[in-house]
Image 1 (cartoon, one colour):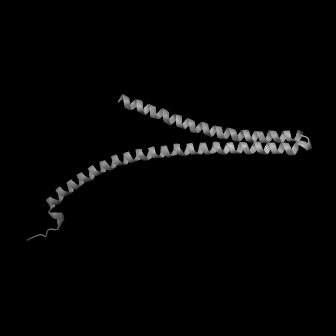
Image 2 (cartoon, helix red, strand yellow):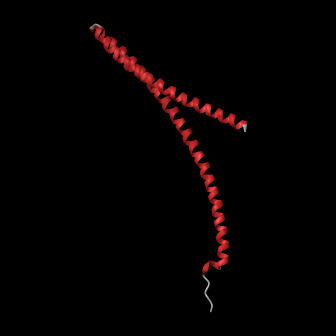
Length: 138
């Protein structure tokens, strides 16, 4: 009994760790997105102060940095989505397993009931004489 409790606690802590992992990946993705927005806004303000002869060069640097950050965001998003998909699949499988066990228990109970009903009907039908198809004799 104690082993089952230890195993249940271990599984619960592993599940919580996976949920935390998915949540941290989501936060990392969202933080990087907001950092990109802030970077764009900041660069827009900085570009106003740059002399005209250096603007083209600065724009190219900004575009390169934005492309690099977007690639990173895309990577983080893919990692988050994959982890979330795996977690959801595990949860769904666990629910199906639990439902399967419950329905198996219920179907087992139903089988017992139907078997009892069949036994009861057989006894009743033999008493009434083959399903009540007898003719009355005078």
